[in-house]
Length: 492
Ligand code: NAD
Image 1 (cartoon, rainbow, N blue to C red):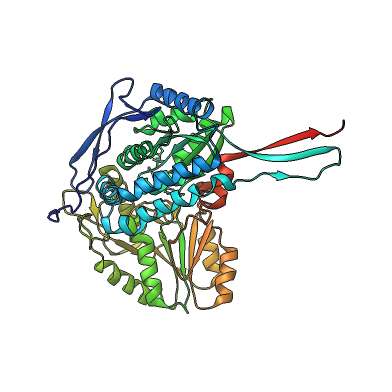
Image 2 (image 1 turned 60 degrees about the horizontal axis):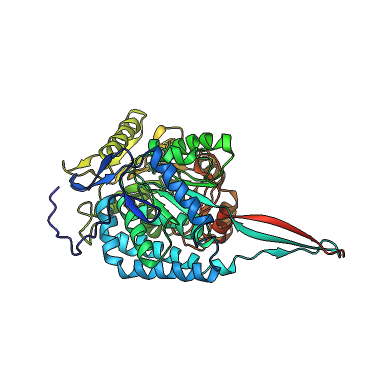
């Protein structure tokens, strides 16, 4: 695919080393890895690759910052001020951050500008307001005692994040953890290390003390697993695939380390007969094609009432053909590349599987061009919920459109999945909408919209392969604080 649109913003590449204790350092074993632009396959930078020894160093730095540095003894209002200063630095570097996120992850620059960047900044500013509002309780137990509950930081947090929303997912962990007075070791995905490093650089510039935010780029098998099994880590906050989530849970079990797991999805998007079909087509299309389908809450199973099924499929295909696939730097691009050759190959395997299991490939299904990992928006119809393309998370722009005959069948199909992250409902019947919201097994249910999230609202699955715990909102404050009971004897 020809890449002609020039980048309007000079990209700011941060130091490509490890950030440990406020210093940019090489990996202890000197290893580096490449980060490449998935739109061109060109090398962007060689980045220091953290290994087990570096994980140990980073955790020690985070512990020291918590217990010996100013972070642990600082007034909450001062922590808040430093977090707002961090947000000011982010704001001052907005275009550089946006351009880098687009470059490293192949994300369309227009969607990073409209969605990822503002959501990330909003998250930082929301939690920057929290430190001096995290309150304990005084509980009236008996007259001769003062009994109160203090909220204390859990301590050192290991945050491990994926490549599909690097900025947002990093900030969803960093901001609430810092607000609670914790220190953080962040491990970004090896596909997209750069914006995490840029955030680290800006945090330092803002005056966040050394060791409070440490960053370890590299693959999960090295530094990632070492963080999980480090006894000095108090909390693991993981976002990623169910398979790795299970490995992390098993790795954390011997130490019973606190754990939040934000995992995958195979979310159903239910279109009822009375829905505003045009709006539903737009919503279902954005639900699966936004970010090239590389979204945990992608509406990858589109459940459509039989009375409108054929018309809906036709409109969905027509809509998919209007979506511009191509250069992420082009403001008009809707779908950038898939993140890597490995991921593209995996998606193509699912296309073959859908065909061989008897689904109808109504449109798409092919790679676009030969350079960069671009893929057509793809619609499979006549999908049965037992097929692999309906059961497994493809993490690509592949819609599985399934027919249902009534409400009961829609709920049965929707809930027949190992996942429980999100669901959508399209109907004008308010009673039906709320009844569906109650019956669907999903951490978030959207009515007549799809894919919205906000810093103020909890985000996470209802168990199974979507994981447990919540990011965002006040719920994240619970993730990074614990409760301490204090009993003072008043008898004299
Ligand atoms: P992944 O599980 O392969 O990797 C996620 C992170 O874990 C990366 O940083 C990786 O290096 C690290 N890792 C890998 N093996 C590890 C190990 N043994 N120990 C410690 N760390 C390890 O996921 P991915 O391919 O980067 O991202 C896609 C997945 O993330 C999808 O399943 C998607 O649904 C999920 N996701 C979920 C949410 C959510 O909020 N629920 C949000 C975004 C993505």
